[in-house]
Length: 185
Image 1 (spheres, one colour):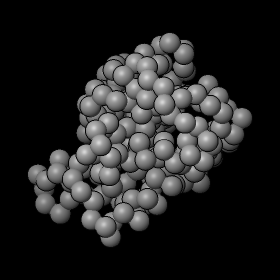
Image 2 (cartoon, helix red, strand yellow):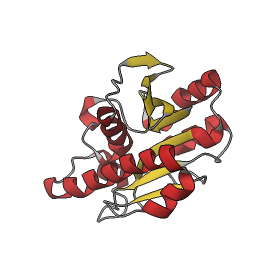
Image 3 (cartoon, helix red, strand yellow):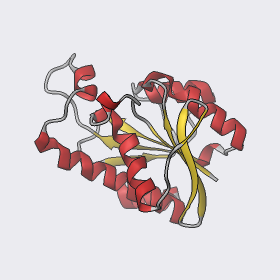
Image 4 (tube, helix red, strand yellow):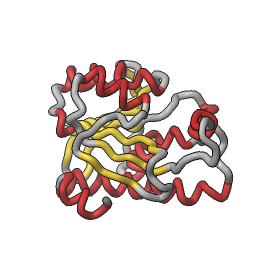
């Protein structure tokens, strides 16, 4: 079984921001496989389903971003998910919009949602897909950049990134993370 977690902020006001790339990817994946994410448990919205012959649990933590681990850890413990079957999808300012990076493990890289998950799980040894959102023009404007309104002309590039992330998840479930990394990195 795979635990697939998309990171974002639950409030409606953040739904169309760069910080919600993880939620947007989960929504696209759920729509493609007709999985309705309506159940609540452990401070998260979730649903179980099957994708490419693999049992999955799709999760959108409903905590604030920096408390994402409070949602993820109980799911990992309850369902006894192996760390290599945890997949976290989130935004990354160090990657260009429209681009993704798949990693088997690694640090949080300054992302507060990942810091929380790593802290709660006690390990960095789980796969993740980072979706590029680029950096703001001015240093010190990072918070407004990730949770602010996205200019209309940037939306197609960000959509391209979430589409690639969705396809990368499918590839991981079908053929494994190594093949997905070769195809998408």
